[in-house]
Image 1 (tube, rainbow, N blue to C red):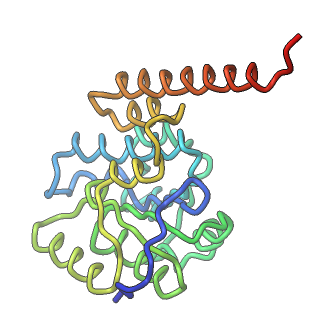
Image 2 (cartoon, helix red, strand yellow; image 1 turned 60 degrees about the horizontal axis):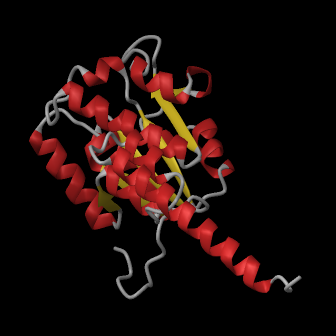
Amino acid sequence: MTDQSKPYTPLTTDNSALVLVDHQVGLMTGVRDYETGELKHNVVALAKAAKVLRIPTVVTTTARDSMWGPTFPELVEVVGGEHIIDRSSVNAWDDPKVAAAIEATGRKKLIFAGISLEVCAAFPAITALGKGYDVYVAVDASGTFSETKRQAGLLRMQQAGVILSDYATLMVEILKDNASPLAGPVYGALDMPWATLVGQIAEAYVKRDRRRSARADRRASPAT
């Protein structure tokens, strides 16, 4: 279990990486805890927001040329197919290429999502905990084949100390400031209805700060 007395260190653009496990066509067809369209939306939105925030992303599949098929095309459009690591191991972390790719990010906070939740997300997440990482799972970007499996997977991860969250909350935590120039694009990637408004607010803050800076420069300049 996690040490509740340990101060919480937020997710940031500098300490976080995303790991997407087995979002494959064949596995998607068996998901029963989410509608296929909703789950696809959530996974793609997560990947898009991570891309805007420049969060390193590792994507892996299991036996894509035989058992479960390729990564679903909407996700490939975001992450690019050439960097997807195929493997045979059940636990993604047991594959040396996947483990090396995660370690190469240099990040100590890992966000996992996968199909299925209780295996493809949970196994590498719990393994990462044992290796000293802070671990999160985006539960609504992860699907499985029955409600029993979902509840068992969530309970097991929570007992192990994994932090469970929804995908949008994780990305907004990394965004940190709605005055950021990335705010509009991030909310847009997350498909939030107020994305345009947030972008306008962020732009207004930038303009305000520029005006303040200009006034300060004028006050600091010697009179001529």
